[in-house]
Length: 96
Image 1 (tube, one colour):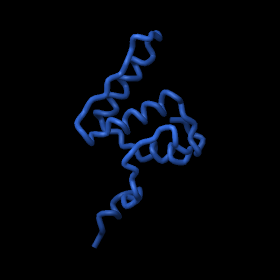
Image 2 (cartoon, helix red, strand yellow):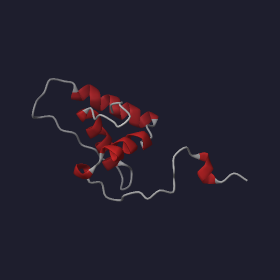
Image 3 (cartoon, helix red, strand yellow):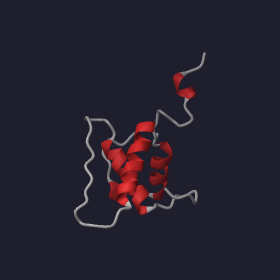
């Protein structure tokens, strides 16, 4: 009989850090964050909206408000946005 964990390509039993410390990320952790981030249709639309707004002429009056319920992934989404904005170079040679 097939076990649930065998349905996933990634290790679903690994420990997940409950606190995100962006300034303590190693290149390996950054790449793992990006590779493991699941982009749903809704997230894709939100990313497109953000990136379209981000490319507008620069001003100090633009801000971003990320809202959602507790545990909905706001911090992870913000971290992925940060990687995209920084154009983070990954270990594999790809960029975020």
